[in-house]
Length: 280
Image 1 (cartoon, rainbow, N blue to C red):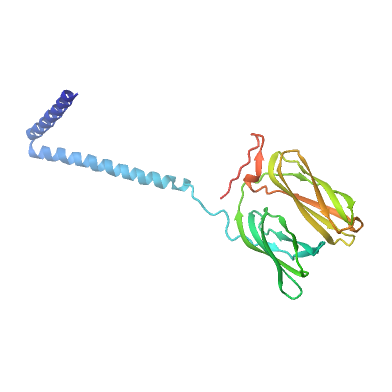
Image 2 (image 1 turned 90 degrees about the vertical axis):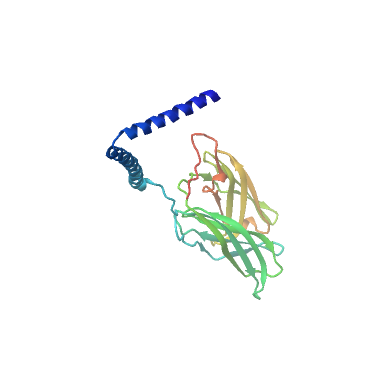
């Protein structure tokens, strides 16, 4: 191998010497023309190379993809007045409605609830999370709490909310027939169903149940969450309303919801029905 390498070097050296010897056989003006021609060829190649690069970049620039915000300045949601309902044993429950004023944005947020008594003193405070779909409303139900002083005012404010623009939101259909009412001591028991009519497995389904009297006033509210609900599944739930006689209940309105904008909440069991979460 070393002998072959030495021979190659000797051949290259002889070729270089032969080229120099051939150049010296030319007249001075011929050598000048030859060297100038070589420089012109090299210079012309470089000009063509960089010129072609600039021309191609300019031609394809209009086809370049650029990242831009999907939305700017989302509309702030509207938080309606907080309603407080009295339960037994100095316990209370509250709710409010959050209206999404953005038709194409979904959001995940955190709320803060503060309740005050007649003296203006704060009697209870809590925080929680909520989600809201594009162009929809969200009901926030503050879990029952105990207070020695009667809370007369409540304020639920949005502490933080993260907006997202979803290009694909699966269509999820949920069925919620009116629950059956049963008298239970001095209160009422409701037995109902939530039906997953979609082809997706849902991580969480939430049912909010409103109870009305004959004056169309909300006299009771409760919510229930079902987890890992598969397609066509009928999930039963039971809600208890102690201290609320069956005779006081005129109608019951259940509302089922799931966060269809959250890809982690929806799982397709059919490869023909992929769940996409395209967002920017």
